[in-house]
Amino acid sequence: MYLFQTSAEPMTMFCSLLSLLVCLSPAALLSDVTAAWEGHAQDYKHGRPYEELSNSLPCSWKCLTFTLQWPAGFCQSLDNISLCKIPPSVNTWLIHGLWPMKALRCCSCWPIFLSDIQEVQEFLEEQWPSLIKSRSNFHFWKEEWEKHGVCAACVEGLNSPLQYFQTCLKLRQHFDLQKVLEDGGIRPSCERPYKLSEVLNVLVPLIGDKCEIQCVTDDQEREVWFQVKIRLSRNMTVGCAHHDYNLGTTPISKGHPCPSEGSFYFFPIDHLRPLQPCE
Ligand SMILES: *[C@@H]1O[C@H](CO)[C@@H](O)[C@H](O)[C@H]1NC(C)=O
Ligand SMILES: *[C@@H]1O[C@H](CO)[C@@H](O)[C@H](O)[C@H]1NC(C)=O
Image (cartoon, rainbow, N blue to C red; front, side, top):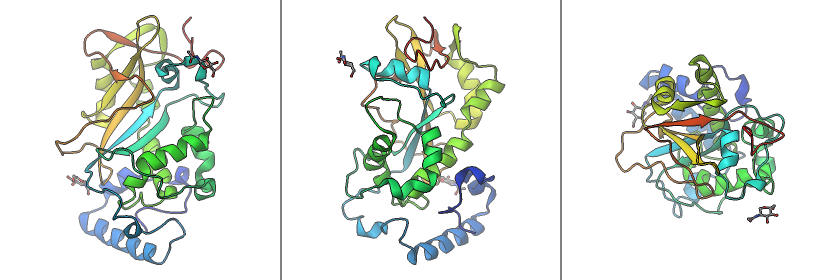
């Protein structure tokens, strides 16, 4: 069995990528990785072999940031909030991206087409939609691939557009923030603000203590939760031991770490009034 399946639908994989890694012994892991590489050597249909590109691309990164965003908060993060939309089907945390750290903008050297990721398109539309009116879903995915994905492509399981997006979907399935928050009694509310310590108590067992809980300040000067950054090692386990680590900034938004003193809001999603869920 290949460690990273290239064709199975991600949603039907019961053993997530992470639990798969964790439940394998090192010897089994190694032989599976070797088998997977042998498979890829004969199969270029999912992308170009990395060696073709490696002269021009940095693969010195050690840590990844997997970023999930909360739609109601994301709308508050845009400079021009009239640009925000929340599709009716969106009711939960969404993928923002998977970013190798310290690799800044990668390159457009590995073109991506919708047909490359067609087999996961349906899942991406649900879990990784664009919330910016003027930006199509594919535009968003393409941008994430060119900015971050190409630099990630030197690692097993991320070495083509399809594998990169499939892995992100598996990570999103594994990091089910909605469920742990719900179970921990942290629900969207216009009235009840939360303390950082309350949120961390619930999330840290799943996402590790090197995470970042990000807020924006809305037009009424309230702190509003909009994003979670999860730190991963190259092998996709939670945490990353390297010191040169930084969670990276999101150029399009004005996010910052949620205040450790005081509290912040976890706004409900309002599809009709995405910008004013609490007015
Ligand atoms: C994943 O990588 C980290 C850091 O390099 C290492 O400590 C850990 O043992 C690895 N885990 C697995 C399951 O390979
Ligand atoms: C915000 O976006 C809307 C819609 O594109 C545009 O009409 C408006 O001029 C923009 N406002 C600012 C301040 O940029």
